[in-house]
Length: 412
Image 1: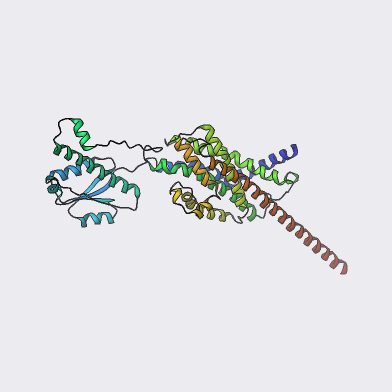
Image 2: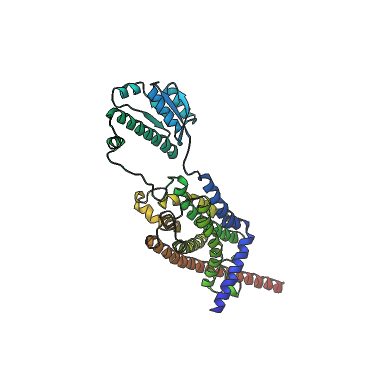
């Protein structure tokens, strides 16, 4: 037992030294997890879009249409950037991306309202960006409802304010945005990005280290080169200790510091967050070690991870409803720790859930830890045996060449 622990600590020290000396690994283990979330969070720190430019085509030219335009422009979400004479002019502005929407007030807008008929306001939105569409459409809807309420009150002739309230809104309702009170994009997407960064940078760093060893034809990471490497479990344990110590600090930075710096929603309990992060980091480490066994060159792992980043974000259920993901794709997503890590972290951090509430994700992460641990051990054992056979063959070839040279000298 003591010898095994001593050997594991020796491998940990050698792996830590190799990590510090490799600039590429340091970039993915330190710089990317530290600075990339800051950049991403800073970009979305405003949470919602404000002052979206809109073109208004007022064909009514009446006092009530100008009132509608003034209230629309006074809202914080949109800005009446242009007042156009016709739709052709407004469409030209949309095509040039000068504005992101058009509000059309028809010629009969004032006439229909004075006749106590229903008037229409046409809203045309650029659907290439959902955030601008939301601001333009919802603002127009809110202004129309508010003005309609005022018109209804004026026509009703009620005596008291209570009668006006009941007449315009018989059923009162309150809109409460749960778990994302600002309705912001940052609070919605950043928690998933933070957990995905942990997995992707771990896979990149471990794969880069393994690819470097293979390119240099050095098998110190997989082959016993001294008595300290004479055990498979101590090799895996030593490497795991190195990666876990590094990412214990980085995970605390990503899950505790970054959300607090940018004031994102954080409703977690420390014990629940710790209980989730331990199996998630271990699953990512063993997954990265397993994937690194199929990486032959340094560039391969970067191409693999970059290709998989966006699909993994969608498959996690953070940016697309999990219920709408086909069953076979959901089954494929279970192969990756990020799927359960993202779902569990969002529920703990943004919704105040406990470990009992995310029991399925918690159990799946521990199952992945066990599965990828044994898979890594199996692949390492195969590579060690394969390399030993190659080394024995090389030694045999060297001996045969030496004997052949010796015989030739004796014959001469």
